[in-house]
Amino acid sequence: MAANVSWSTLGKATELRQRIFFTIGLLIVYRIGTYIPVPGIDGNELRAFMDQAAAGLGGVLNMFTGGAISRMGIFALGIMPYISASIIVQLLAAMYPPLIQLKKEGEQGRMKINQYTRYGTVFLATVQAYGLAVSLEAGGLVTDPGWFFRAATVITLVGGTMFLMWLGEQITARGVGNGISLIIFVGIIAEIPAALAQFFESGRSGALSPAVIIGVSLMLLATLVFVVFMERALRKIHIQYPRRQVGMKVYDGGSSHLPIKVNPAGVIPAIFASSLLLLPTTVSTFSGQNAGPVMSTILAYFGPGQPLYLIFFSAMIIFFTYFYTANVSFKTEDVAENLKNQNGFIPGIRPGRKTEEYLDYVVSRILVVGSGYLALVCMIPEMVRTELAITAYFGGTSILIIVSVGMDTVQQIQSHLLAHQYEGLIEKSQLRGKRRGKTGKGTSRR
Image (spheres, rainbow, N blue to C red):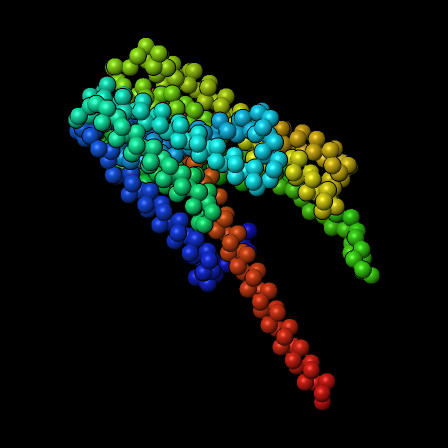
């Protein structure tokens, strides 16, 4: 597609330019909000605590909130409560009959499910905000603990999460790219320069040897190249269209292909899995030594680099890759129905139910590779990162998010540019047709 797009048309594509500026403007608003602190936080104590927790789960929390949790900004919960609510609602929509019926009602059903997701976001954000407020008090990070601080923290953090959810929806509807993914993407990108400076400072001070610095850099580069290759990998299924007659004309049948990505779910499974891991441990991280026995056990077994953490993370990535592909990104039932309506068919496969079964078979085999690739990319850098106690921004999840979201956004921009070029060509052909028609009339009069 990129070969057919002229980037010089960006200046002429007014609507696309407005969408890009709109997206950038809202993302700037998000970044400003990460620096507005929640009232009542002891800044010095919080900074010292986050310096100690940066190599552990605190660093992962900081990555997904764009640095807001290290400053305890109004967006400290980030967009994670919304993602967690989306997971729960989508799981219920695949198993709970009333929600299954809502999914079949088209646009109205989708709007109702989105409304339930928002209600779930408010509930989860409220629970997390209250737990975080109590944990901050237990950790001695508050200047004036009490119910007033708890109420102010809950209202501020829940309001910040709901505002972020609204920002993400506005970017998706009126901007470029997926708003929720872009919010996480920008949060990671904005903190990477500081993470790189900290990494190279560790090498300069002798905490990390030059061989480790070079090895980690090569590993990051190799992971980046591997992710780009796998995200562009396709399985093409041949599609045949029969001859058709329109009026007195008979058109020859054509052939095309149905592209299926090796990873149809994109970065969503990694974000979902990370969200589930962060949900029960956000509170225990800030409780510090005052965490209860249950929370201490959770941190001991599900901390970064622990065997149970790696197993659970991998299992959740594989599960959500299959689940999200089957229910959202590539619904074989809809694809088979669309092919049948367009009189297209796969050679040797009957249209309808047989086509759906064949697509299920192909997609399930592709996802063995796709889900394994996602788990591998997230696990290997994570183990190396934990072993060397370096920043979470060098983990596989952050690389996957940066590459996947960046490629998807650029692809959407290219699609807009390509559509604008086609519109320009159609307008030119219409103008030429009018001119030829006028010339033809003048000639006939002579």
